[in-house]
Amino acid sequence: MKPLFFVAVLPLFASGCASTLPPDVIASGDLAASQAQVRPLGYTSPVSGYTHRVPVDPQPWRNQNDAQAPQGDAS
Image (tube, rainbow, N blue to C red):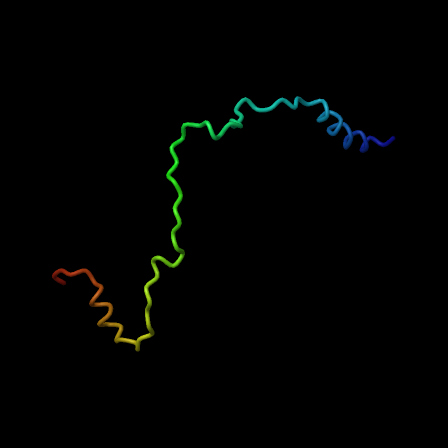
């Protein structure tokens, strides 16, 4: 047999002998008895924050910019 075969098969054989114990931390199966406080879910409409807007003609950009600029003395 070729040595390459042993190089490929040896890790597979060794992994079969590895420990398969579960990890130390396991989630509890009894989630209904947990003491976690959860906010009750309520229905909210997906369009509850919708505001109807209509197209408008473009405004001069400088007036729009000046209206949104922070107010203060421009020295």
